[in-house]
Image (cartoon, rainbow, N blue to C red; front, side):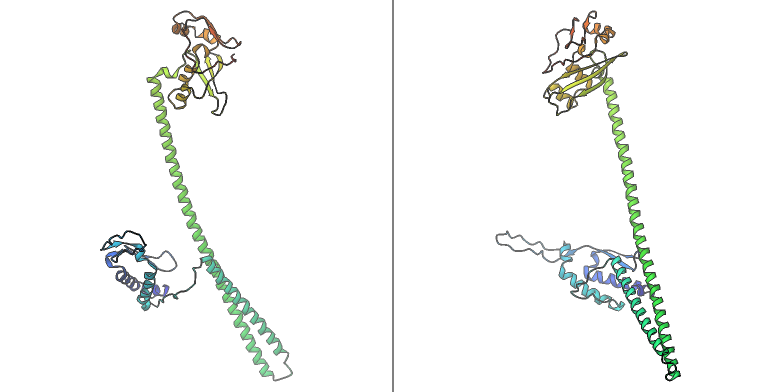
Length: 371
């Protein structure tokens, strides 16, 4: 292929390939044929539509329903790339390429494709073997030269000098060949190193591109998640404005903390922390997991404030001091002056305020811990 390119016959070779493709697959089925120069030798990439006009081949099996075979053109890559067809393509292509000095591969060859690394390794080993063989010949020639020197003074001096000169020339020629092979081996190693670097750089470029794509996708995802979170906050703000009663305790205290027992807990409880001014208070109450109120909260139907209001009465949400600080609120809720007795530490709570009947506890029990 490199010879065709040097001799300017590449265009003729391309035309011959186009002719073979059209004759083999039909001119109307040849979509494109592109010359690639990105590798060591020029090559073509052809795209064809696998249209065939032969009848569909079906395996006949006993008991199978017989279907009518559709006639006319149809798409079938299996038929176009059948084993027998491939053998035919190789034969006809070899005939078309014969004017360019290209020959068909050996039929039935067991040869296998070699990787670049394997090819270079075999070439280097061959060079090393040739160099070793030539060095052995040099040693042999030097031994012959020494033997000739031993003949000096015992025979024909002129003949001995001639033989010695011949040996010197032979040694020099062998040494030159060794130097040439060593230079070729060095060039082969450098070429291999350069190709490895090219592949490595190509892989690194692909990796860099993939990383950049991932970073862009991640930034888009982060921006998308931030937008979703912003919308959630917007919805939460609007909901707070539209339904303020869902975001406050019935006692009037500020809810500063809430914790529910893990789902695997055998004795689940709800722990809260409230604050009125500088006064803080903690309370806990036990419940059953199947309680409808708990299920509504877990399904997102109730806010934390609504959950606390459902499980704990207003006087269970604050201490006695907090109740006094919230006197005005309590008075408004109760319809009278504040008279409370909350958080005595003796277990349970009591109140003399006219709060009315307590809500149904829904399987809730009061713990024995307050402060």
